[in-house]
Length: 455
Image (cartoon, rainbow, N blue to C red; front, side, top):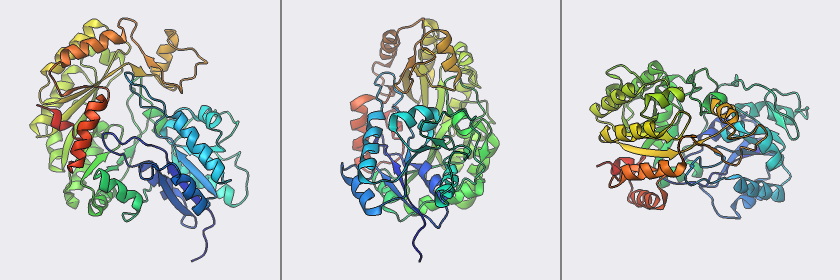
């Protein structure tokens, strides 16, 4: 076998492993876009957290290019905010010390703040949006051609002015079921993730997904999705989480995926994020037949006034009907709610909390305040209200606060309603929830595990 033309090291700097370590699926798609004549390796901080492990890997592999996938910039928790920027700076410093390879940044977190992160982290190249564009960068580096004119590639010191458009490259996932990288996640959580499409057609005021992935849906072929799911099952996965922003934003495609799971004989359970939309009456029964066990609703509020302000594509009535349909299908149900956004007042907050009390057999996760990101309608609202300034650095987490409520009042009201209810969780649940989930994982439990807090 001839030597590879270029050696590429792809790095996942994520160290979060609560409630369970999340497999960096984005790097599989980046690896799938790199021509076979190059050699690709993945370094994952969840797999190798030792301080000297990255430096040792760099010195041994001697890459020609290092890619850093920045999925999350912070934990987006208004009650216990934590930024990851200093961690990223440490990773960059290690790379610069250990080798001379140029550094390229990518990932959803990078896509939101491309120019700022290029400057803060002093990277050489950046790829906002679809990471498959790395193939164009490698083609230029391989031929010693200028990178400046490549569409969608950002250079250090360059202002990013292009509008994001989805890449035209095939979305091909590449992974080795025998690799220590993948086997680490199978051993430590048993959970693997799966993408069935990119893009989001909704217009929720706070959400970055339409900017990151595009507003047009780009579905994977359901049969190919099912084949990937079966490959993960054969590799030893005990649970699959579908990583789409909203699995049922296309009822037709999600139903086709479920039927493909049935046809191929997938037997492990799976879960996904759903919007509580008005859906066909047999929808969740089909999902359950295909192996769905966990429904995580991005509900956000139970007040029609606030849902309208958030530009959600559903009503309170839709939420209750979707909730009951999921329960009738025998599924575990959770609702995620974001309190204190535009339009929220004491009356709407009480309506949401009282309505949550009437939704039985569910876990609830309450988040106080909404993270403000560029390229969203919430950014424009916050700017017009003077909550942020046009030149403000939003890399440091800033949360929208309703002018009619204080965060302290929101948290106090949630706490009052949550008293005695283990299934009502604020934010990530803190140390107590982390310890509970760690004990369950140690006993071999797999999946989200929040069903165990539902009375």
